[in-house]
Structure formats: structure tokens, C-alpha cells
Amino acid sequence: MSQDRVKGIDYLTPVQQEYRQNIPGVSRVIDAIHAYLQDPQRAFKLELQLKGTPFQLRVWKLLQEIPCGSTMTYGELAEKIGSGARAIGNACRANPCPLIVPCHRVIATSGLGGFAGERGGEKLEIKRWLLRHEGVL
Image (cartoon, rainbow, N blue to C red; front, top):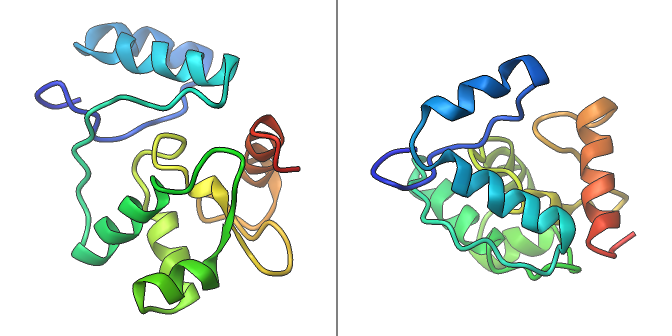
């Protein structure tokens, strides 16, 4: 958090959760995430302070326009922005606010693609769960 704006999201283990109480404004972010988990149609109304390259910022802005319950492929996003699918994937990997900037809604033409820089394992299972939660899968 910086000046009441979200700069990034970290997934905390139970041991780390005490950390959240030391940062002003974090409980508002946690409440917004809990609301999403109860109802994925609830839009996040949080001020963001994203830091990235101009290209990454453009991609992250587009990601926020993908409605809940919908997906786009890396290629479709690339075409919209005049870039390549791998560049879109790299911007998704660098996303500092996953969930709020919904990179999980970007998929490969041949399947889910990756999530948080991984093409399998626990992180991809999180993406699968989020898409099921939103009614996509």
C-alpha cells in the first residue's frame, strides 16, 4: 500500500498473516478479496498504483476490461495491442496485483496456458480454481 493505493498483492501463509495488520489500508484489500470469493461478479473498487513498463501498464489496463466469466487468449490480447502473444504472457507474469488485475482470465489457444510464470503445479491449479469460481470452466 502506498498513499491508500494498492501496489501489489502477496499470497500469505497463515504464519505471515500477522504482517497484514501492520500496514494501513490492508484490511480494505482483504475485505475486497473476501467479497470476490463470496461473489466473483463483485468488481474490485480499489485504487491501484501499478509500476511497470509502458507496455505492461497497457496490458494490465486491458486485463481489467475482461469481464468476470470471460476469457481472452494471449493472441487475442496481442492483436488488440499490436504485439506478440509472448509479450502478453511476460506482462501477465510481471503483474503485481493478480486477481485484481485478472491475468487468470488470459488463456492459451491450446488450454489454460500459465499462471504467475508457471505452466503447471500449484499456481496453475489456482488459475483453474479462479476460472471455475467465475463459471468459465
